[in-house]
Length: 168
Length: 168
DNA sequence: CGGTACTTTCAGAAATTTGTGAAGTTAAGA
DNA sequence: TCTTAACTTCACAAATTTCTGAAAGTACCG
Image 1 (cartoon, each protein chain N blue to C red):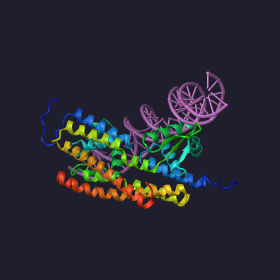
Image 2 (cartoon, chains in turn cyan, yellow, orange, brown):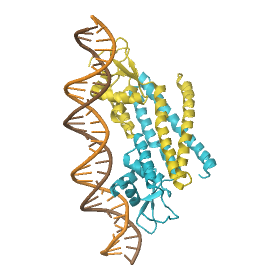
Image 3 (tube, chains in turn green, red, cyan, yellow):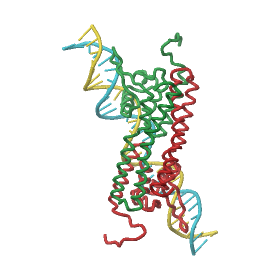
Image 4 (tube, helix red, strand yellow):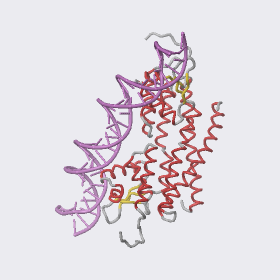
């Protein structure tokens, strides 16, 4: 219980941190994310360094190394975290780069592209001249529109952030 | 096999329709939606009238009335479909209004608001002056930015659609 | 080349989610 | 008011997902 404050990374009240982690993760789950990736991601977001090792994550979240491994693999695939090899150690470190995960969140590129392609097939096979075909075509047009708009929006965000937070 | 074409709503090749429904639903599931709501929604999208009864949905998707009921309740809560009482019948009809469901899809309003509020708590409890607190504050700023941008984007979509499809 | 410090994979137990049948509820029409 | 078509709710069985411990794989370091 008795520990001197360290200059580099003395985490604050673990209760408060844990409350945030679980609360935020719950909201992510509600939005469709799997539980463990959500918890890991929230834990990283709420760490001072923005990067934690597998062991640290396991301890904070009270889960096995296997669970951490699975969650991190998922997050890395989604480009929401990146892995770093800690030099001079065989330990790995998982990091949130804010610029990187904003993009990941809004991109969903891959998903939207698959929606678009399913819709395109639908238009063809139901017939572009039928009521149903027209509805699908309009939906497709909507996603195409959104695609472009989101790219432009992210450009504006980068500028906005630069101005407000002074980095990019 | 022998059927005269009806003027009002003769659905085309059920194979093709079903293929679209299952394929598109699968993509929605991938994005985090529950299976049955996804299938019901896809079925409505691919119908000529844009509206089907519970019995029609059950037959097309080969599921029980209970399953349809649950799925439809979910979709209605999300404002992705609306219920209509068929006049002169105790039958109900579920409809996709494209304008309504575009809004529902992009709004996610409620979800983003909850994320924002979880982040706000996090900033407070971790301390706005800590590295973690600053990260959360920036994330919060991002969502606030996105909120506004999406509203503007939808306004532009309405105009775009009006021009291209001539309705609103 | 070991030895070892981590990480990943995998089979299976536990928890959760999903869909069904059947009973319950509601309201249209006689 | 009664009958009955239609929707909803509920308890449970089945399917799926999730997480764990243990075994296997990797690659630093001597």
